[in-house]
Image (cartoon, rainbow, N blue to C red; front, side, top):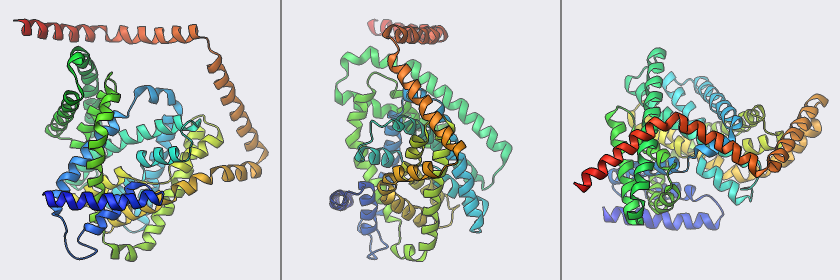
Length: 450
């Protein structure tokens, strides 16, 4: 096991360093490292695949836990209509497009459904990294893009649960699926509400005793406890990790936990992406290159189209809408997880996995260059737009600028009054629950004193 870990880490470290020098995402380096140590390139296994798979599964949990930690209800509410309409347009549009591509390629319903799910999610990690490296972190469109990515992550976790259920029964039954969605929604709400009412209060009570070591152990314990709860309830372990991350994101210790988790997440995420690379057969890339090219084009064109339309319908300016669409032109970690799920359950064609991974590598490589094309494409669209469309674009720009100016000029007293009214509404709706929680901890203190 130590030998396996040594081979994985040293190979991933050297290859990712090379990719950093080439100014490419390190995720691609991890995948290439997996190809190098896998059985398909040199004919021998340098590491035990079972050990790598076990560590990769742990890596998935930590990645989803950390994605949940980055989830902020405040950010989602600030994005508002843009996040909701944008995410819905992208997800629905890409699901329909992906399913149509699958059926056009003569795939059965199950393969087409999995393919659609793999194509409908952009990579949060890669998008935010590309935006940061392009110096656009403070750009106006980033807030809406972040909200869309948050909703996509939530939908991706839900899709994992639903696809698992569909794959196990090897059938697609509408009524039963709706029941499953209903049960899942109720379960998520209950877990989240109960977690929000209990865990933040608990952490506030014990905060004076929480050093870094105790906090990270407690956070991991809570994460794994929710993973077991999800499995016992018949859902995927990924759902439990993500939900606990969402709960802890609403605590005072969220940023501290996120900081402490970063090294652990990076290590196991690297192992997960290496395990993805180990499943790629380089010869299959030559065999399936037409499919890889077609899928990559579908991803790029589809994401640009649906991302731009969704953000425009959600109220953004045309330039900001296009900036979002042009930054979403890749698939990433959730696509790998869904592809691995289909392969593990034996319900997808073996060719889909290398096609998806290769398409992800290609689109990720192209992302920075496509983002740079946003302004020229916008200028071309504006200069060739009809007078009616040009008038709409100008009006939207003026309306957004006016709203921003009004928000900037809002007095501190008005803002305080608004926040106070919101707080009062929340307090009125949660006062009973808070009394129950306080009573619970008072009883705990009394028992400790006894």
